[in-house]
Length: 250
Image (tube, rainbow, N blue to C red; front, side, top):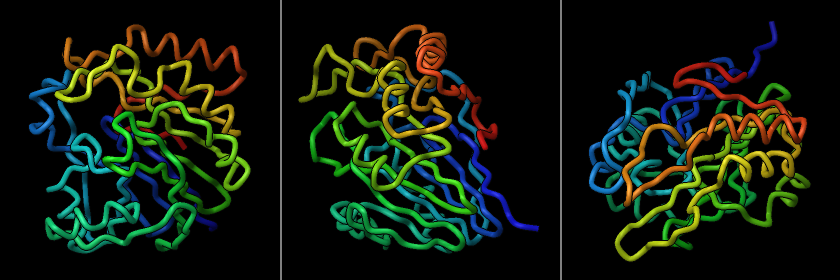
């Protein structure tokens, strides 16, 4: 029997992709304690993440809601950790040896092919954020981290698309961090997330990076996210996936 690609949404921006014996996690999150001073406590429990030997992981960037150091260190003991090349030095400093990749550089992880592509962080290049394209068994997924809207969607589609599923951040957070404060969204809104998926040529757009943290005035997410996301997707004729933590998308 030919193996099929299976994809689950995990907590926050976490995604699990499996193909045959290959298990890959992107931005898995368990330890939320470091986030509390600004993002507040989570609004529901964060489920543990199973990391059997041979699990692999990709990190979109090193902000602590996407890079759970303890979890990544545990995965690194028996599997690979993929990152954007400029992030590698910081991981080496804390005892994690990553596999660094430049933008557009592909590598194989078991039966999967993974490639970092353009992403844009609201704090500029302090974290060298990327999105990850993952391909296997004739299917293709993109994980967009916590990017803002940017102009590279169409180039990504030309180089790597179309996509079966695009995972997009949708909380459109108004963030007032020390040294970084603005009254405009720091990540994509529900409507922008849908538009990004349309530009990418995705068949399905899955909402992520919402619903877990809301801590005004420091971290304020958009209101009515799921209704707006579904409405925007309906208007654009794309399938919206509003999926609970741990549930399948593909």
